[in-house]
Length: 360
Image (cartoon, rainbow, N blue to C red; front, top):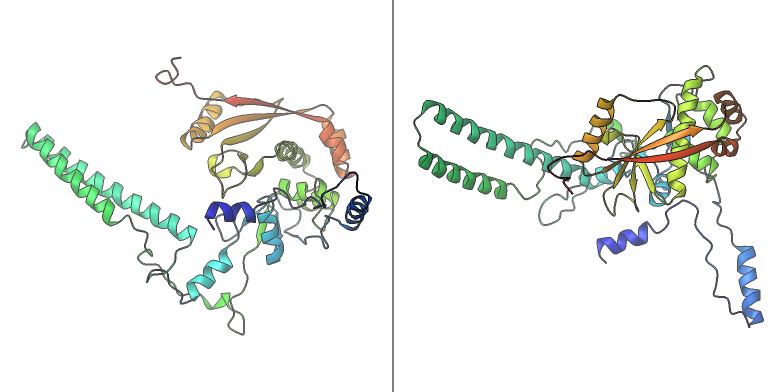
């Protein structure tokens, strides 16, 4: 089975609530109607038990909303890509990676590398190649300044050094275990019986947790309790920011996008068509209050970062149609439906105009 097919089967559902699977209905057959109605009444797509979350520390400016059960962690990741593993890049795979390091299984006579190790290895290879290239450029510059090399000789030297760089890149192109990697693990990650402890938790963004309590009630906490736990009562500005960002998050999730944190690219969210295993994110979303304004340098710098990653910057303006005091009262009472209905979302695509590329 190919990797694409395996991912399509694993990430079959875009949300943690699955549709009912009903038998085919034959309209002119009464028995078919009876079977269909029986299956419809009998089936239920609600979770048998809600997912437990832990919030620590409560009321802090940076609360940690954690899911610690391994089954629940993988369920949230496989069904919508919610949360981030605290000891992983995104998918919570720390436990499996450490087990792989401890195992004696080998692939092709060497240790099988995880995605995190592959990324680190490639970054180190690129850094070493850049250092070799800078060394060659510095030597050529020194020869030019001394005037001891002719243009013809410089071309020959340059071509010879390029061949060396190509050979260096090819010799280091295979992914190996990084030199200096210490495969020994500290003793405190093992229990008394010598088994590897599960130290990793799936951490949810506040907007993700709010979505999983209001839009899809699968967490064992109500929206009101969640807001009271992560927002201090004497910080109304933090509540306004949370409601504004959740409005944008809910908007894109309801449109079918997979929404992930965009802090890596200097924005609030990034949007995937399906999810990280299938393709790169296409858009960066910056959530803004329609009544506030930013300096031009802020827009330019944000667009430059997103453009450098080949992503389109979307400015998502959230407009309040009710007073902030009324919105806070609704949130305090757990009436998120009234909060969302009192806000509207507008979008502007921001592109950096380059004269040499945008002539037409």
